[in-house]
Amino acid sequence: MKDEDIVERIQNNPKFFAFVRTRNNYSYVLSALMLIAYFGYILLIAFDKSLLAVKMSAGATTSIGIPMGIGVLVFTIVITAIYVRRANSEFDAIKDEIVKEASK
Image: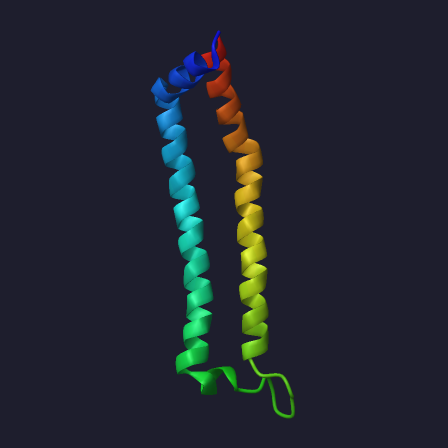
């Protein structure tokens, strides 16, 4: 069987369209969450420096801006791990099933 035939079968499979839609929607949601977190933090830096300059406690040298920045970085790592976990389990299984059906 030619590779072009397999590609055509995959592209015509309704499971492929559902798979692409699901994966894209999931990616868009996670990307939107990341952009909100990142640009929210940047906008706070730009427009409300006094909020980020508030000290953690009396006598502390660290302001709340530092943990918030670290929180954005941790959020990035967590959201990436969430996507990778789902991609390596659910998305890969669906992809393999679609390819297997097209190769018959």
